[in-house]
Amino acid sequence: MADGITIAFEPLGRVGRGDLVLFVGDDLALAPGIVETIGQAGADLVARASASERFKGKSLSALSLPAPTGLDVDRLVVVGLGSEKDRAKIDWPALGGFTASKVQGRQAHVALAATGLTLTPENAADFALGARLRHYSFDRYKTKKKPEGEEAGGTALTLMVADPVAARNAAREADAVTEGVIIARELVNEPPNILYPEEFARRAEELRTLGVEVEVLDPARLAELGMGALLAVAQGSSREARVVILRWNGAADPAEAPLAFIGKGVCFDSGGISIKSAGGMEDMKGDMGGAACVVGTLHALASRKAKVNVVGAIGLVENMPDGNAQRPGDIVTSMSGQTIEIINTDAEGRLVLADVIWHVQGAYKPRFMIDLATLTGAIIVALGQDIAGLYSNDDELSAKLAAAGEATGETVWRMPLIPAYDKAIDSKFADMKNSGGRHGGAATAASFIKRYVNDVPWAHLDIAGVAMSSSSSEINRSWGAGWGVRLLDRLVRDNYEG
Image (tube, rainbow, N blue to C red; front, side, top):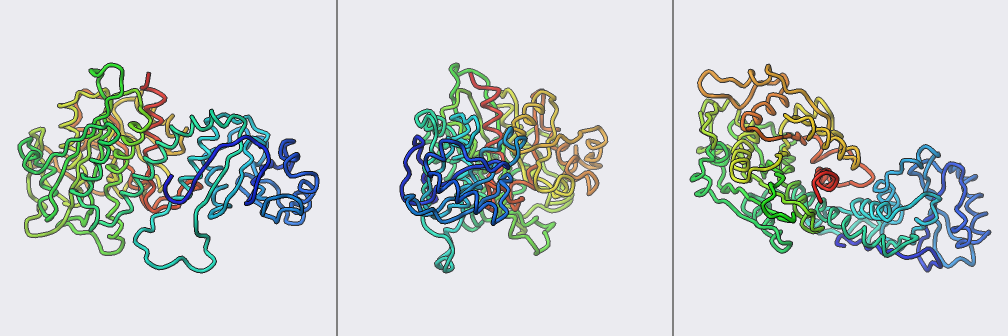
């Protein structure tokens, strides 16, 4: 795997140079298998060091100590698993991420088979996923050496498990998801002078090597299709718009209706004529987090040969304020034929989604549509930066998304859609306006998008709080989180394959 971390699976046994990672609960008891490995002298050392350092074995705590004489390792790293209640619901990716952070830049044998827990191959694969995601960093544009004393170099983990072959097989599928998350993080982290619509489309085209069909629609084709709302957003930039359609056909029946994932891809959002304030505007390079998630998800599904048909569609634009930019007061015509009064040019993502959603449901007749967008600051006010807002016209799809969120930690919270929100976007001069004002801003934005959804199960995920600059976790220290790839992959895996 890239980013300087390698992971191998081996049976519990003799260990060589490097660190040895052991696990204990709040009773500080070592599993019998690990006592055999480190000897009674090692076990006594762990007990004495725990007492002197007041180490209690709490969940996601660690104690590092030099290995005793006669043991052919450099350090013992003792990781806490917590109380019996904690151990009954281990978050394996988080445990993997935490453990990797304690041995970064080193070689380590990790005694997973001696945790005292029931360890499945999938648990081991999730542990490896967490370790890899925690190790990720985006530093390709740094030319200076790291500060003296900062851990550098590769990390090599050997996960000691009961059944290495089964763990390796499970890890192959987990690796596909890990790579999808990292691709999404890379896209969000890239600077906007490097990642603009044409370059984003080029990177999406790389999925062809996995068997994904890729179609790139240029401005002439978008105009031919009538995507007037999307093109209105793009007209203020010297960078041309693109729409990319990604198709993975993995179902046994090629004619099976696909699942559809649709992403907002505003590669930079200045706000247009309704320009944003300067403070924090640099973060608007991440306004394509939804599109990044779609590309990462298609990578994950294609890499693990998911048995399902999927369409991914991303609308790629820049929102800039030159003399040709759309103005507040303009009226534009969307692909659906509905007209839109532009109230605020900084309410642009919904214009992009309107045309792409209309195209996808008409051209591909999907079983459902899920759009993802860093759409509103209002959702951050409502839910903070740990939970995405979910708006939907379908209870079953909402429940499945919520379950996938609970399983992966990429949590969603269903928000209301009521007639009053829809009424707030009525316009005096057109079929609708693109902003309903400050009150209920995330809900009126979702209501706008809903006007472009026909009789199809649909969910809108407002990921403004979670896609970039979100809360750090044990599996993410990156500004771009790659949020949503694990959620959507789990949704597909649990409900739509086979």
